[in-house]
Length: 320
Image (cartoon, rainbow, N blue to C red; front, side, top):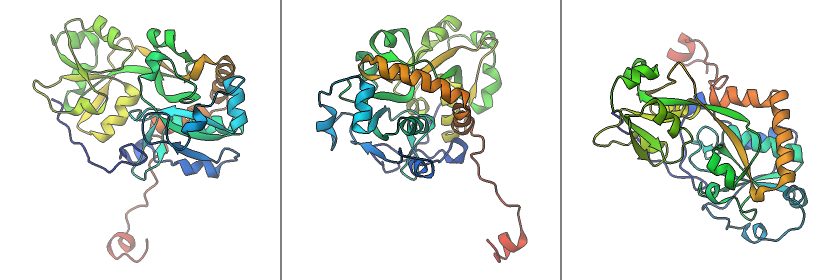
């Protein structure tokens, strides 16, 4: 059963803060100031999902040249993001926009010698192609599918996610193999509205009843009858089980199904696509992608060191 224990927290920059603690990461946008700029300028454009706000007039301008030329000309790259993209993009409890793709976007801006502007957008843009008036590139844990690729220009993949199931923690061993899951009969599985893995699940579990859910948070909403498990990826599911510790992630064996993530380029711009393709390869070679994966996805080096228990500190409070 999947009961929900949601926290009502006042939103910041149009998003609800997510308290995932240091296990997923609490780096803030101000971190950009600690690195060599000129990409120290970071701004959140608009709190709604449209392209309006105080930058609306400029976003709609008809500029000549490639999208890459326009980015350099204006001195800023406009990065689109989705609000339900933990651990790639999310707002932490300090009100900062953080995550794997936030840091990748900041690094891209630094390497282009421009500033970064983050624009919240709706996932529907992936179904129709991305208008350059909205943003330049979407960096928000976007999965490549055949349908999306027919409408939207993607870069080369920068990360592969793995098909997994979110299950009650006490049943973690029951979902470790596909044959074992099939033997359970017609399970009720929660399926996010946007997933590239539904077909694979149908192949493996033809008797399963797929129950649409409105995003990852909705997986944990109480319903009758309850869900037996939910389809996710190991990378995203692990972050959400930190929020919901009564649940765990299981990757069924023997075969692990993968789905690639890539960045979506506005206007199918060839110059910006080629540049970012090369840039992604550089991030792989120089260790940046691995470092961010370890921090934001695996949670390594994210929990601060705690001093050993001490009578003077913890009982007498003589020292801090």
